[in-house]
Length: 455
Image 1 (cartoon, rainbow, N blue to C red):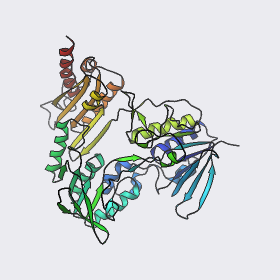
Image 2: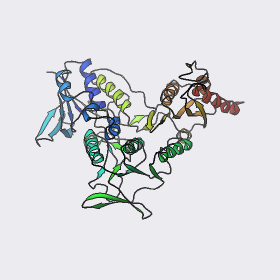
Image 3: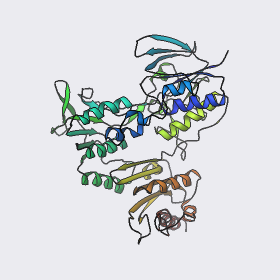
Image 4: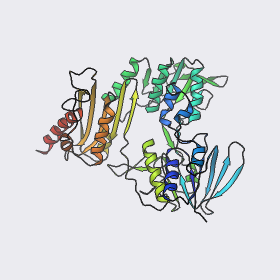
């Protein structure tokens, strides 16, 4: 009898695991259960769908359930929620959300890829009608319909990447946007200079930003959110509220099944993505990860990581022994014309981890000074002043900043020092880079700080 694999979750990690397992071991009988109505969709594209840049929800979908069944030989069921895991019997209970029917399915091996769910701050009125989140395609459809009903104003609770991307898209759609960020500054993992630059950029485009203050209460009319009240007692009228206060691992099933949970309630896995049960693997936004530099547990839910972990889990289910080395937490986003990217540790994180960390920041044009269209790139390097080891990098500026941070992410992964980065043979042509690339300028300034400490 063929071995049975059940995968819980049909987005990045889950489908990567199922597809890899099937390729490696075609005789596996695999079933994928996804409780939403969509699989394999680009959640990071949802703000641009809401704003109208992406026309249809299906444009976000890479592969649908029919294709998974007919072309990949993997029965995939949407609107099917796994409600419990019985490790002793090696079964899962699955509810068909369309009919209400429940069935028990046996497994030999199980992959949990349940992802993450939006965090809901403990604000009175947070569960009212007119309060939206943006995590699934269905979330995007509901929010887009509201925006298209001639919404004129919106309040965004939280100033993370999704909140800022939506602030841009809503503003371009003609909606007046106000952001409330409880922390003292936006994107606090960035250098304060960069956080301030992001704030000023938003304000230049008409977005109102309140930092260091949250929303005390969401006030309703006929059950629908119509105002927010600040801790200072001020009220602001709004057509809807969007909550963008981060996410938390959707690890409830795993916890109820007695699997070991760790940081923020995420599922603990080893380097092969195996849980505390030898027949169960987990991957993606529901699991605890390892910070590549420090080796310490972290929770960094990113689509790139989910896909990698899914492939590793699927290969290992099929008999392999691939390992996931860890994450740097490399991120990039665009807010209006400004691109923001980072990788590795911030200065505060590096110092907290015990490094003698310092930073340096430079501003340099991304093209030759005489070539039209050049824009300033600001790059911040975080490094150990004793050894010169590069620990983190941040950048803000033009579209080219993403590629430069990718170079620095590679350097960190390889354990390079700022001296070694300074010796890199980077490309040069007036339309794409100055003779001394911003990376080299930043590294040369960092080298000076290392030398001062070791003489």
